[in-house]
Image (cartoon, rainbow over all chains, first blue to last red; front, side, top):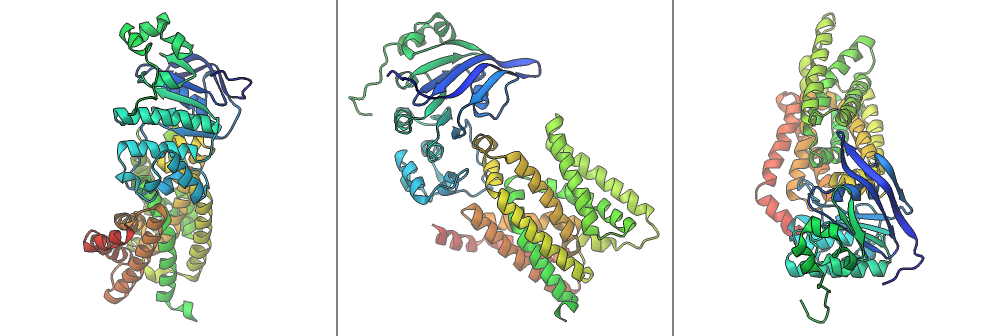
Amino acid sequence: MVKEHNKILLELKDAGVNRSNRWLIRNITLSVSEGEILTIIGPNGSGKSTTAKIALGILKPDAGSAILHTNKIAYVPQNLAIDWTLPLRVIDFMRLTNKMTFQEIAEALDMTGVAALINKNLRNLSGGEFQRVLLARAIVTKPDLLILDEPVQGVDFTGEIALYDLINQVSSELNCGTILISHDLHFVMSTTDNVICLNGHICCSGTPKTIVQSKEFIDLFGASAAQTLSPYEHDHDHSH
Amino acid sequence: MLLDDFFIRALIVGIGIAIIAGPFGCFVVWKRLSYFGETLAHSSLLGVALGYIFSINISVTVFMISSIVAILLFLLNEKTELASDSLLGLLSHSSLSIGLLVVGYLSYIRFDMMGLLFGDILAVTKIDILIVLVCGGLFIFILSIIWKSLLAGTVNRDIASSENMSPRRSELIYMILLSGIIAISIKIIGILLITGLLIIPAAMARNISNSPIQMILLSIIVGVISVVGGLFTSLTFNTASGPSILVIALILFILSLTPLKRLISGINN
């Protein structure tokens, strides 16, 4: 897929975050355009979520700059723990930051395959259903920029594949820019346009195919990871 | 005139406060701020003392002092490494101590300490009615403006701030409004028991509700029943008004744990 002259939505230039004299991330330069999926991978503690928070404008970079060219952003955070003292149905959750109509909410839920859950209480959802509701909530406003922090956690193997397919489909239907943060490499590789390997700084970046061959990637994730990944092309001929 | 009857005045003020306490109490429960409510209430003793010194309506001075405490807490939370419960303990007990010292110094004034601590329906004046109705209406109006962003920030602050809301600002506004509620409810429920009026109806409502709005409406209903029942108890048995109200609320809470719960959740599903 070649993207041409698409509007740039987000630019980070040499961005860094410093906490207690330690750089959590440093020299992060990246950009996301309309219709592009950018995947950020890296080990635990490599600064993936911090990078997402700069991109979202929740954190201000202590060095460099973060420029957003849109304010239609939607976010799926990692570890969304809802306090159960607050009774919240799916429909209340869908309207959390917007004023969408019932119709629009039903469509978004339908898109992620959980339309039947609209009046269920969030507390009663399974892990996979909850992640689909999170994704539906993020796309209901038809955002320009979608930032997904570990959107498939707690979902089983087949569910993961389905969710990544869904993210891919959603981002092409909305033609939005997507930043996908993940620590599991397999499925990501087949759906993303560009990959950034993060470990406090950007180790390597590029298309999935070039990146699995780079020395930095192999150093970070080990040769076996690169081997298992390089032949993997997502095959839609078989059913899951 | 109707308002000349002290009990009618108490009923009007009490029902007004119960209606205001409903939505604010739900946020106290959702945001786990019950100890914050206690802190504001403790600090209000200093406000009461200042009111006596300068001969101002105590609602005004209590509101000023507890707003200052709320803002201090908000700032300290951002600036220090201490956990918020330690900060609350610090503010709560130091402001209570200052309040007690000032009250002790004011020995020439006869304080109705029991009335301050537990509420006194006999003390409700027409000015109090005016304050509760005007301030209460204003508080609910402001809450309805910040409602969306406050709720979104309660669910997840990161989602709220990345999706064009200002959860921190709404939180500060909410805390100041909570100070205001404490200021206007002292005469009915007393300093020691205000947090109970915020929490118990909301807790009861949580047991049987399915959405935020439903929980707020139910806690208003529970609050009103408790206030009316409590005031009648207080009148009949000559008990302090605050504890009487809370005991009725507690009975309703216990009822919500029993078959009543199944009945109502049966309707919901």
